[in-house]
Length: 321
Image 1 (cartoon, one colour):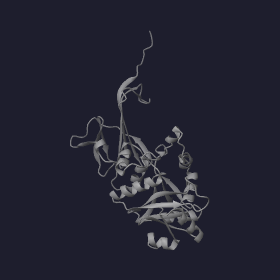
Image 2 (tube, helix red, strand yellow):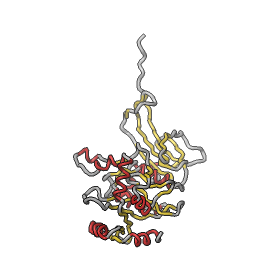
Image 3 (cartoon, one colour):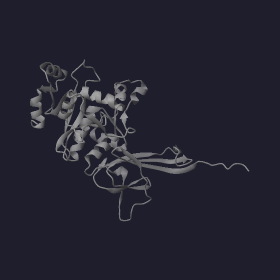
Image 4 (cartoon, helix red, strand yellow):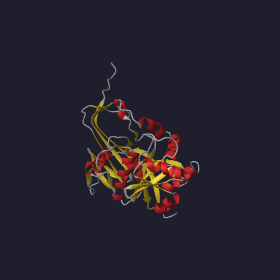
């Protein structure tokens, strides 16, 4: 008797994930929500929702209950010999969307925002609303300054106070790609302190269990790097967008890619880039330098820089503490 031929199974393939912190897990939807619950279509929701709820994606219903980033794929009609195989798309119809549930867990919110961000140039010139739409579709591509500006608008809408933070190197010649960095500093109500947050390169700066402000980060750098990096996104998520290089449009992205993926290189880069921190206020960036020569060099770098001594800078932005 001839062997029986097993033909690939044809099905409608729906996938869903929850990224909460550094954990990624698959979700199984239902054919219908509980009768007393109403399901909103995922596409109709904003990027960030504040209440637990049932949502509908394609022909499945999912419960947004745990805080984090929910990602949904509709591959359309696919050929799938078994559940472990990657699907082969048959009809070309597909859809992708995501939504972040944020109630009060600020750290999980930051994990979620890092997971929809890649360091790149694609959406840098887009409006704030279009950046939100890109993140809603799954990934927003911005370099550091654009990411910090985006967060300085987004986080206050969620009740989180922010300010724009720059860092500059003080040693070596200046060039076009490795002079400093921009992040956001946010006031974290739970800890009653300012905390430097780098969503662009997916990390927080910590010592023990304490999240560091720009001032504390700089002090730790001056003590020889007395801090650690806390990653904000799973290693499989996001990173550096180097797609322009495929077309031969080479940029500093290739320089930053290994730094992003190597914790030792990234920490060395942070130590160099935040040797002189600065905070945006009144249309200028206020930095401090430790010596007259250092202050002169920093002030000459940009007309938007105002450079003062360290004690005055601390009084101005941290109340003298």
